Amino acid sequence: MRVLELCLSRGRGGMELYMARTARELARRGHRVLPVIHADTPVLRPLLEEAGLTPREWQVRVPELPLRSAWRFARLLDAEGVEAV
Image (cartoon, rainbow, N blue to C red):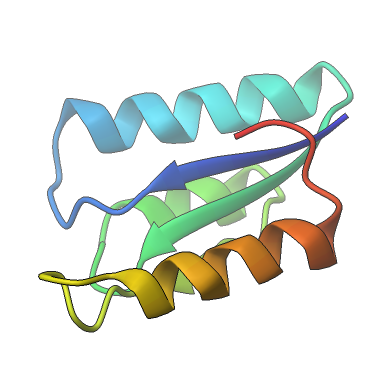
């Protein structure tokens, strides 16, 4: 199954570590994992790359009205054949 793991937090805490752990576990179980992280997240990229996953960076440019980001996100889901988020 093609699974997208999404974490747009810029933090360095539990949520980011949990995302990295679940992405690694899903990949270990044979799923094709596409991690999507915020461009300014320092802790996630090394954890995911260590597990052999290549994260995509994502940034919402207009947080008040993220319609363009939602459209870009929908295109990403279609292009990558994502079955679960």
